[in-house]
Length: 216
Image 1 (cartoon, one colour):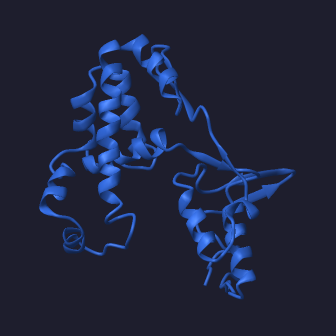
Image 2 (cartoon, helix red, strand yellow; image 1 turned 30 degrees about the vertical axis):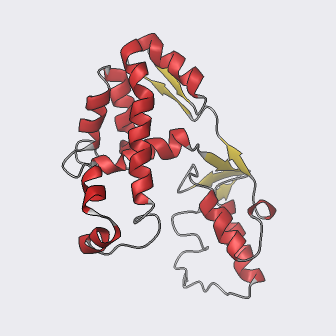
C-alpha cells in the first residue's frame, strides 16, 4: 500500500516546465543490493535502469580556500592529502581499513536482517566482535585518533553529518560509511534516482504483484 501520489516513499520525483527533481536520495551506494533483488526474480538490473559511477564523488570547500576532490582513485586522492598533511596522508589507508572492518562486522547483522533490539544484535555477534565495534567511541573520536589536520577531520566527520547525524554522538561503528562510499564507490541512476522505483514497479508488474495507492 502506497500512501503518496506515486509509489516510492522518500524516493520520489517532481517535474515541471521541462525539469525533473529528485525529492529524496541523490546518490546510490551498494548497488549489488539491487542486483541481487532483480537476480532473485530471474532478471538483470541493467535491463531496468542504468547506473553511472560518480567520479569524483564531490568537491569539498573550506573557508580558508582549501579544496579537496573526493574520489575512488586513491593515488590521486592521497596526492591531495599529502599537499595539506603528509603525516595524515600516511594514516588514510589504515583509517580506511578500520572503516572496512566496521562494514564487514555489520554484514553479519544490520545488513543481513532487521534488528528490533540490542539483544538481537548481541545474538548476531560474538563478544569479541561487539567490542571490535568500539561501542564506547564516537565517529569524531575515531577521526581524531587517525588525523591531526583540521580539514581532514572535518571531511571525514561530514560523512555522518550529511545524513543528519552528529559525529560527536554517532557511534564509531558508523565509520563504515567512509568505506562504503570512498572504498566501494557511489552511483547515480541515469535520468533520475526515481528510475529505481520505476524499475522495481515494472518488475512487480511483470511478476503480477499490484501496488495499491491510498492517496486521494
